Length: 508
Image (cartoon, rainbow, N blue to C red; front, side):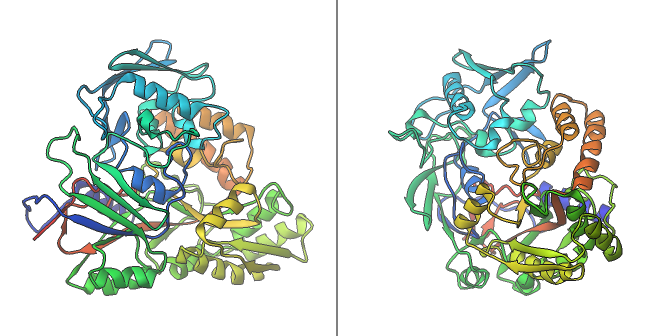
């Protein structure tokens, strides 16, 4: 099974096609439907998957990942690390233009990263992909920029800078008078031409794009359609050409439809329950472990995502990643006896009440909550479900006003993404409040180590701590699924979930 999963990933990432080679056509507008609306289009603020998917086509980073998930040059042609390891020098590509016609320079990089690192800016945890507080960004000359870290080297900086478009370079014209960004100006293949609140965004071809001949499309129109049935009906009826997500129960029917193309890849992500460790009873590791031991992950996978997923019995990493570990203390069969013993040891022999918080706009999270409600009853935990819409969900999560939230962590290429931003003490995305000094030291060491084998061993230790402490209870790793009309050509479904529209064209 594992070999098959890996083979599917390789084929999907390589864009293998047995139907021949198509001649690219230019022009036209791709009508795309997302599952959620966008939280913000300020790359330094947002943590929303849907927001980053839009920015993916508007902004570019110094480095990027190709379809084989290898780090390759993007806005930087080359880079080198100093002997002491603290300073990285990036040599920019000359002749790259922003969509407003200005040429990209090192000063633009310095301005962008300095804003992102501003400790008073209230920006997102993704700033850690540049460096800690005290990191200095300097434009050495027109096309050379240095990043100097204050104490410890970050050996994987070229990896971190390409992980997502939160580190994309924005033009100063992007800033509103109050210093916020609502429509970033970038060097990417598309530019934001029109925004209608959170109901519609129009991306138009960047006429100054540096990669000759790209993009093929004139425009991409993006609308959020939260309801699975409405979204799929819109695809089948020709109202949209491409959808970000389908209801897993519709998979077989859509595959059988000759007018629709359905493609998949093993998703580099994890679906999980986040427990609020700042409040009882979830501040007791025995309670968190009891919940994990009582969970039937295969049943959740079947009910929530109709079996198009791989259950996770330990840490967050599935078989589609080279960072997977064999440590799986939570067996495929729930250990209810041990779960009850742990509850009793923690002083909750008679159980307690818990509120599960899925997102009403993501059906699998609601279905998972319903299954968890029944499963936890077996060890005396009485459950209720609160499923707010996305904006309210984010507010409740961010303020710590929850018992247990259900979500996914997406687009994960490197081990650092699995273990650092969401789990290290004090970081913005650490919504459960988990804190373990030994774990923190390990994930810091993983950042300062370049060799894969050494890093693998470091994260193996971190993985065991995280799994045992169980602030997050990992459920399953989904298949990445995209569905689109049969005239949509060139789209590659990637395990990192990146939606790259600049290689897409419309046939006929």
